[in-house]
Image 1 (cartoon, helix red, strand yellow):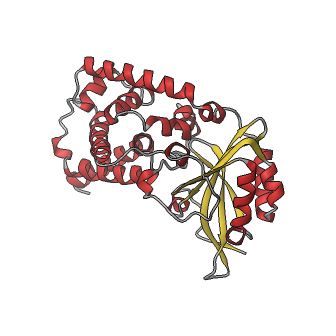
Image 2 (cartoon, helix red, strand yellow):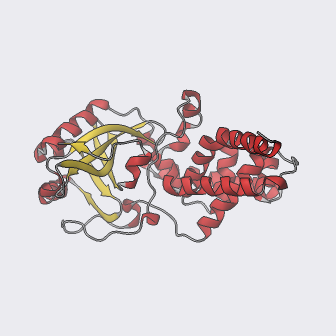
Image 3 (cartoon, rainbow, N blue to C red):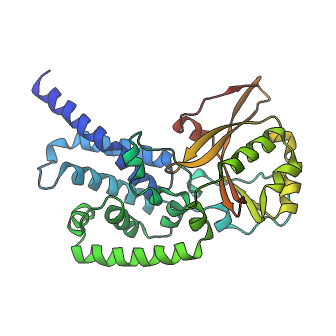
Length: 322
C-alpha cells in the first residue's frame, strides 16, 4: 500500500467512526432516514474529494460536520416543512378508502437505530423520540442546526460558530430562540409527554393479535376514547371509535391475513412491521410500520407509516411466507 492509499484508508476509517452520529444528526435535521443516508453519502464524497483542503485549523470531526450541516441546510432551503397528517389536516369528515397521497418529502418518517453500541443508543435518547424530531421541524433550519450541535452533539458555541460560519453571539441568540420555541411546543404536545412513558408491551401484543385475526371489535376496543390513527403518505386520518370501526370494516379486504414482526423505532421505541397478502404471489409483502402511542393503557395514536422503502433500512425481510 503506497502513501496515498494509506491516507485514504485512514480517512475512511475516521469517517466510519463518525458515521452513526453523523447519520443521527442528519436525520434529526431532515426528518427522513432516506434523506439522512443521502446526506451522509454526499458528505463522504465531498470529504474524499476535498481531503487536501483540510488544514487541521479545526478538528476533523468539526470539518466533517461543517460539510454535513451545510448540505442539510441547502436541502432544507429547497423543501417545505415536514409534518404529520394530524398537524396537516382535520380528521376525516367521511370515512372512505384513502386514495390521495402526498410526496414522501411532506412527512416526518421514523428511523431505526443508528448504532449497535448500547452506550451510544442511550446518549440523548429523548432527542430521538419521534415527537421530538417532528417538533424540531418547526424550527428554522439554522436554529435547528444550532440546537442539535449544542444540546445533542454537545459542542461549544465557538465550535458551532466555526461549523455554521456564524459569530458566537449569533449562535447564542439562535440557541436561545430555538430552546424557547421547543419548550413551548413540547408543553403543547400531549404526544411528546406520552412517548416518554415506558410503553406497555402487553398492549402491543394484544394489538398484533387482534389485527392478525382481524377481529375489528377487539381491535377498536384497544383504542382510547380520544384514539386516532394516521397513515402517511395519506393526509387522511381517523379519530374516534365509531370512525375507526367503520374504517377497519371498509379496509378488511386489504388488511385481512396480515402478519407482524416486532421492531423498534427512534431510539428503541417499540413498533410492529406489517406484511400484507400480495395478489401477485403466495407471499406476504411489506406494507407499513405501526407505532403505537399509549394513554391510560389504551391506544391514543396509531401511526401507520406506509412506506416499503423503510423495511430494508430497518433490516426487515423483503417478504414472509404465508
